[in-house]
Image (cartoon, rainbow, N blue to C red; front, side, top):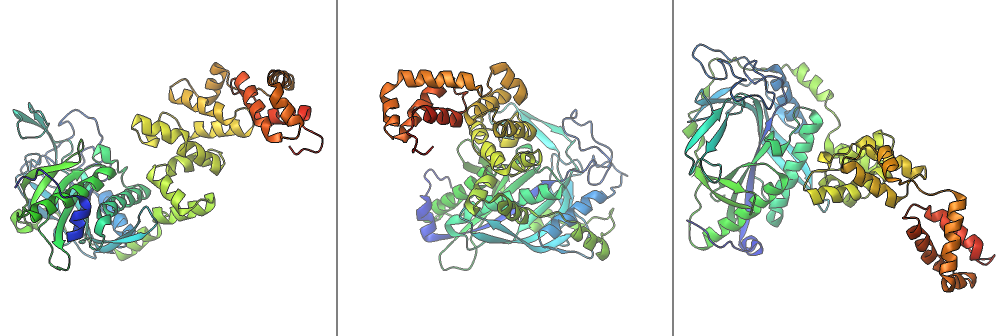
Length: 505
């Protein structure tokens, strides 16, 4: 059934409870593939990073990547999972045009990690616990390039090209248990969960988890059930969603689409769906298979994995400070509210701020510039903060120049603008643009005298005791000096010349 008009979101939630399941694939940052020694480096010529094993040639035998197993255990421990004492790989049989073996080496009923949870913080500070069903090891498929169509998808293409460089790259798939009880906040929970998971993966240093590069992608499973009913509805699975915003939009759209189908008397089809970034919609992909359709069976060429308990405990003890614990520590160190810390997190500013502080900037100055001027530039350019052409060390230098009095805030913004424009480091921009604060007493005194002479009425008010009027003269001096005067010193000079002896400064 084709739905042309969605049910308003509030109306959908008035009738139905959403139930979600999130499957996140994380591409591990290992040097070699999961079952062979081929390089995983990005950007190589198509099909140049392949071998008989990852091409599925007869007689080739896989060998498990030890770092891949270690990364899987670390992820499982960080997700509060139980780590299997014994597990094994399985063959997932399916027609994979971009997997030359025509099956995927994965884990089925015996994952390496299972039965965990991840607490996530929503925008208002509420903590929502997402239960984890499993985290298992598998390999990625190759990449298909569909040529000749208008959409880049297989439908309408004249032919397809296959690049097997990615085939065999290690993946960890993290699967949640059904997420119930989120109600109208289900899309927000989905976004917050993937965001927290991404931060955790990066903290473990097992992957860069760059969603825009496909290193982390999410399948959003969603179903609706009428209020009061226990049985789950039929689910759809929106595949390979690759941004936090898109995860939220996909969940919201599917809630509205499911409600429209159900309200019209239609039936939800269990299928995969494609997400469209341009308008936030989804379209049908293919009918979704059940587990038995994949004809799983144990991988005969790989021995089972039995992680030693002492090794698992050693990895547990070596886990880094996890993101939520670290954020709470930083929030206390920086003296900010939970709301402000959430804003910093949402802006992707935690790491830039930390690096700027490490480079010598006071915490308040680091937050000020990353959450102010630099966040504005990022929003206007459509880039993440860490993609801006400026380093934490350069921001720290700008903060140092402000603290020393060589720059005021207005001039500092111009320096940042120059660095972002590629004019050089902060000191170079200051020199080229002539942006240092005018601190010469003679020059400042002359500018103050000129402002007083040109604004006699305001000067008389100050002489009469209306000290607040000094702001207008300060503004005149700042304008005359192109914003390069030390405003505080200018005000002092004005009051020295005009204010009554008993007036405060």
